[in-house]
Image (cartoon, rainbow, N blue to C red):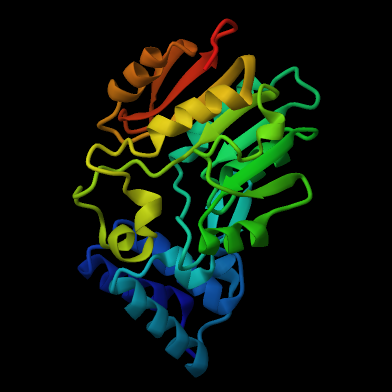
Length: 283
């Protein structure tokens, strides 16, 4: 029987050598998955028997080869939830939680708001809004068949999954002009931008990259959002850290928006833009 402490220390050294950003955290997550205990209770877990040790070593080897830890354990934490993830869907990042925070403040005082999550992927945004603002009616839009499978696996009764292109005016046009809040984490990385191996090799390319300037999806989404929202409704859209001036300028140029603001993430990088639908705009 091998001790948990010894196994994690050795795994941390292997992952450090492989260049993993958070080697100790990942080693603990993998150990917890193998032992079937929460990460916070690893100190109370029994040691690794031979079979568990072999499985743990295999997972550490895969993580050292830059397979995402979320794929290895089968979930990604996001706010109050753990979302099922795997090949074919974008892994939600902590930065997007800030967009959800902003969106939830816009819903305060609304008993039954209508919310749309465009480019929903796993459903991280939609599910968080539905859980943290009970009474919200939330639509999650996704058109990629593989991502849709993960979205449907994660979805609850509080979220309506919509299979369709978020840039198509016909997609859920029955609620045009009625939505209170649109949130979106679209593909936005400019083509050719260097990314980590976990992103390059495991996140779906079309969920990450969006043309030479990274705006191939954001441009049409701003128009679709304007059609979905009622006058005074709010839009929040995540973007690349090189878009801190570009996306707000794009929003202002459409003539559909007021209160255009850009927001920084916890590292001080431009991360998402917000705007309010003008009352007198007609597309």
